[in-house]
Structures are given as structure tokens and as C-alpha cells.
Length: 524
Image (tube, helix red, strand yellow):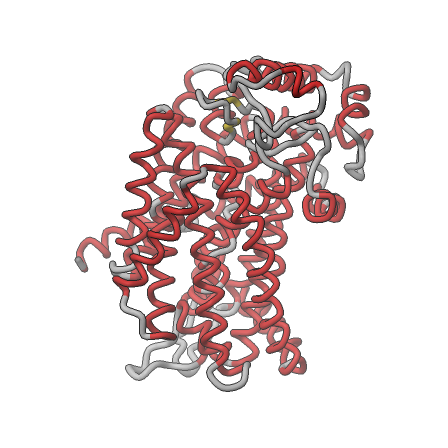
């Protein structure tokens, strides 16, 4: 087992080293930030208003509302990366790793926008009439020739593999660890409970997942943030010093202190970017799969809503968790063997130091269970869509069975190997997706400018969008496909068209879709 772990560590170290993903992620994020005119700095406020307050585009086509698509993506994203991932980054790279997590988040917002825009722009539908979007579609339809097919095939295969790592077994492993340390719950029992709850939620498909996520995600995020603010309020005088440590150590490395063995600058960069990606998934293309099902009047609007996921996850939640760990000094402590604390144990210790009694450990355990469970739900959808792309809708039931079984297995295998496999899986998804974004960057920038020129505050109705962009070729193609999906889907699902015209939509759920090939991508 040690030999296998050594090989996996070497692979992960190469992928996340200075020659592969670090320049690819940062370079592509910076490039798209410039191509899009700093969209994350100028449009986040309007995007938050659309996604979290208004929540939907009235009359738009799609399967689930923009808010539910965002909640599904948040459910998959807000998981162990916000609790164990932040702690692991600090334990391995020092407080300076947090700065590089921020870098990953800021430039990752441009990547999240780009991939979600493309997911809606080139989405298709399956035999069940459900809209599908994501890299396995836009790489094929957006990039002409065999290159797009190769990139899409690679991404699809890596998504299926990675979904069982980052989206399933890592989450189960962290839940089991938290339940064992806080409530002395046997790992096998935790596995059974997680598998049972997951099976119940997955029965209803994407609508069941998005509904459950839409209910649970806001509550768990607010609960966790309130606990963090309580701790930071009692350590308010240490916050400036904590920020100073983060910024300084990001460029100088961190000396050994207490149980912390020290970390070089390259370690801060490597683990900061790796855990940043694990936390916000920007550039992976995973959240784009959820965005592809959203009801939206234009791909730009859903791209901006999806972009807020990275802002909430990394710029807000990761920052608060990191500050709690640094201001309490928990990152400098050692366990009984003299080793530095890491993962869930480090975060739990920080919360126990900041909250009265043993309440801190209980808070972390509850939040981790909620975060990780919803991540398993959200990532199931990603893995399912990739599986359908390869094997068709007949593979959905077998995939559900395997997924539920894997959630049990993840609760019982070694932690180090699970995290390393997750890092490798994440990296393999990123590479084909970012190459696709770079190739399609001209299309993304052009159609984004065309939309934001007339609707910078995202307030236009579907009718106003149709009128303003009537002469824009890309929008005409997309809108024609969306209209055809909706019209033909009535026949596909056996819905009475007269009932639809009279305003009744009880028979066909949140949205309509129909199998149809989208128009070819316009010349870039």
C-alpha cells in the first residue's frame, strides 16, 4: 500500500508542480480575465442579485431555475474543501497557501464564467428530454474537427473517474472521520447511513437533487459562517496579524514552529492552488454540467450566476475558515505523536479553541456531514451526465447503484490515498477543459460583449433580449435551438400543447427540452 501511495504522490506532484497545472490554471485564468474585461470585478454584484435574490429568468427555457442550478453546483462545491481542504493547505503549505487559494478563486471566477457560458451555449438534450451541458458537449460542438472529439472524450472519461474521488469517496471519508472523532460512530455505520440517504435523494434525478440542494445549502452555509464570525469576533485584534502572515508567507515560505514543520514558497503555491481548485472547482468544468440545465434567457446570464459560486466558496467561506485556523494558533499545534495537525482535526481544534466547551468540534462535525453529503449529491449528477454521454440513458440505474456503494466504501479506506486520487482526478479534468476554453475564447468574449453592451445590470426580460440581439448570429442560433427544444418536447413528453398555451405547466415540470443537434459554432 505504501508503494502505491508513493506512485500516486509522484503523479500528483508532477501534475500540480510548476510545469503543468500551475501555469495552465493561472495563465488561462489571467488570459480570460483580460479577454472578458475583468468581468469578475465588474459584474459580481449584478450576478449575485440575479442568482440569489431574483433567482430565475421568467419565461426562459431550461429544466431548473438559475438558483437551483447554482444550488446544485454549490452543493457539489461547498464540501470538505471548505473545512478539511483549507486546513490541509495550511498544514502542508503554511498560511501563505491561503493567498494562492485566493488567487485561484479570483482568476477562477473568469474560468467558471467561461465554462458555464459554453455549457448553456452548446447544450443538448438526452432521450428523456432533459437538457445536458458541459465540456463533453461544448468541446465537441464548439471545436471543429477531431480535436474537439478527443478533448471531449478525455474530459468525459476523467469526469467519471474523478467523480468517485472528489465527489464521492473523499466526502465519505471525511464524514466518517468527523462522526468517529465527535460522536464515536463506527465508520461502517456512517457508510450505511450516507449510502441510504444518498439513494433516497437520487431516486428523483436532477430535479430531486436541485430541490434538496436548494433547501439544504443556504442553511448550512449560514450556520457555518455564523460560527466562524463568532470566533473571529472574539479574536478581532489578531485578524490584522493573520492577514499579514498570509501575505508574507505566500512569498517567503513559512518557518517551522510548534508542530508545523515549515514550508517553502513552492509548497504554498502548489497546495494553495490544488486545494483552491478542490474547493471552488473553477476550470474543472464540473459546475458547467449543472449550469447546462438552467432556465436562462441568455448563456451570459447563467455564466455570471455560476461565477458567483466561486466568489461565495473561496473569497468568503475559505477566507473565514483560514482566519479561524490562523488567529486561534491551531495550525502551530502538534498531536500526541508530535506531528502537526491537519485536515478535519486541525479545523475542529481551531473551532474548539474559539467556541465554548466542546461545541466547536460538534459544529465542525455537523457542518462537515452536511457539506460532504450535499457534495455527494451534486457530484452524482456530474458523473451521471458523463456516463450518459458515453453509454446512454440506460446506464443511469447501474451508475446509481455503483455510486451509492462507493459512498459506503469511501467511509472505510485510508485518507491519504483518497485525497491523492482526488488531486489526480481533478487535474485530469482541468487539462482538456482549459484547452477548450482557450480555443473558444474568441467566441466567449465576442458574445459576452454583445450581451453586456445592452444589459450590463442583467435586468432585461426574454422579450427585450430577443429584440436587442435579433441580429446577433450566435444568439439567433442558440435561441432557435431553445425554441425548437421547447416546442418538440411537448410531443416527446406527451404534454397537451393546449394546456401549455393556456398557462398550465403542471404536467411537464420545471422546463422543457427535446433531442436536437445545436447549430454549428460560428467562426471564431
